[in-house]
Figure: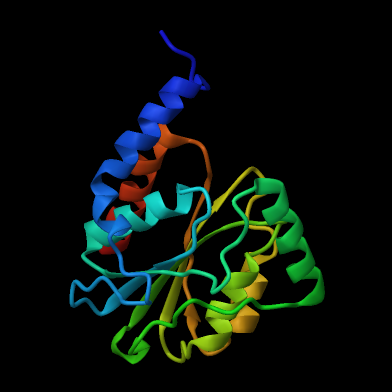
Length: 194
């Protein structure tokens, strides 16, 4: 029997988890929304793929539209370089430019907003997303992955950067728990739809 932390097992689990997300890879890079003609949107930022898996599960289960949040200047591939850049952006209050905005955000009643926790807070690109989109009257439902630090101050960031949205209790999960991801997300979504 292989260990839960076996690299080969993790690779297989990641591959299996991403199989249903093949359609996400084809998402246009010019900011188009993958449309399901829904009144709900899943907008997400993911560096390592953990948040992308959760976004895909929500998108498929609820039949939402889907939008990947991307920085105009992508973060470095090197993890430590990304950590340093994100720290500098956080400390200076810098909000990096988006590659694209969600077109016609007014058509949505609910926005599921997904992101990882970076340095005990939201990634700077999420602050940009919130600052550049009018979420007035929309239900904002966060789904967050983290590496063991929990939500950090992300709730206060969401509240301060989207003060006119109705902030709903979201979903929080420590990343790198592949076996539990699908079960936990599906249980949470079932509670929301009952």
